[in-house]
Image (cartoon, rainbow, N blue to C red; front, side, top):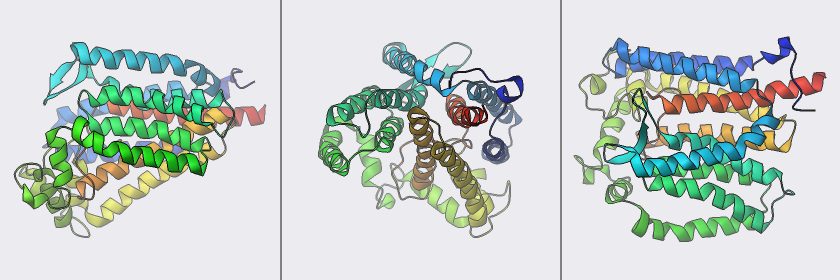
Length: 367
């Protein structure tokens, strides 16, 4: 049985190629954050500590059988929903948004939990019904993803809400949606966009969308982030200006240069060649995750691992896209590179789930 316990040697097995890819990106994060953060060692110490916590969490989750993760899915989802409601009631307000819970020692974003809770819960729903899913099953799965997304929009945090919804939709898609259902879903989403524009999006979010094609229409307002990041990326050229030599970041023209716009700092200092190397690292990690999904032993493992791998790709795509000006600024950090605590630990737990699928597949085949 899948839930059988591993031997001592097998219990501590992890996917080494995936781990090496993650560690390489984490090391690069510390290098670029040292520059982006103004050569502050305290920032590196905090980020390093968060990475260590995340790696420990990843290692622990990797030892848990996917069958156990499947049983835990409703509980993770329920706890996440409860915390999202709690945020709306007593959440910490910062930068005009109410997204955090202040625990005294540290603050964390419960919305990050739902980046795992939603795909886990949708996969749990899908595996309890015959595939491909029927309309009522699709409706239930859609509602499961939509409820926490709506709560996150109220914070407001449109970027995270979109990524949470996307993670759930990816599970539904991987479950074998019929083309007519995909077409119907596309129509529903398209029909909902005007309502979202008039009744959901805040004015600053609308300005970001309107200035996407012409950021110079509001160079000191909604277009400022995009303009400065494009200048930084372009000035890096082919090989970059060199580590610690980026003028845009050193003179503090790049906003949020340690978090959402850290790629602009990286591209200015390491250029197109460095950017291509970073993207190659991401492609390796995503490819390894998809490979794990392909060889997963059961439906739940295949759905959750595939959704997590593809969602990780979209994190990268959305962040880089907004930095180079092809997507609106939505506040999605660059995974494993941007400074942050909750997002780092959440990502590591997601990788732990991937490693769990890989580890227990090998165990089952050998036993």
